[in-house]
Length: 76
Image (cartoon, rainbow, N blue to C red; front, side, top):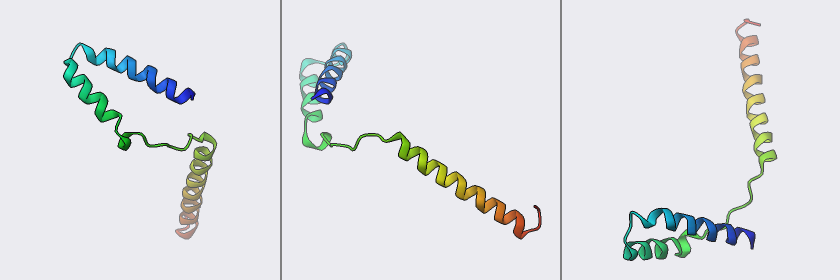
């Protein structure tokens, strides 16, 4: 529910910002286009801890690989 209110408020703000550059007919076509089902995709909520976890995994894997290369070539 809050998400739809946020979209409505954002849409109203965007409509006001576009108003000075677009005619009423163009504005109506833009609203129609944005209201089409293609642009109403539900997305999963952003999960920062999962992003941090995968970042840690990638950085650790690269660190281990570089450590292994150093040992393999006798640099460490």
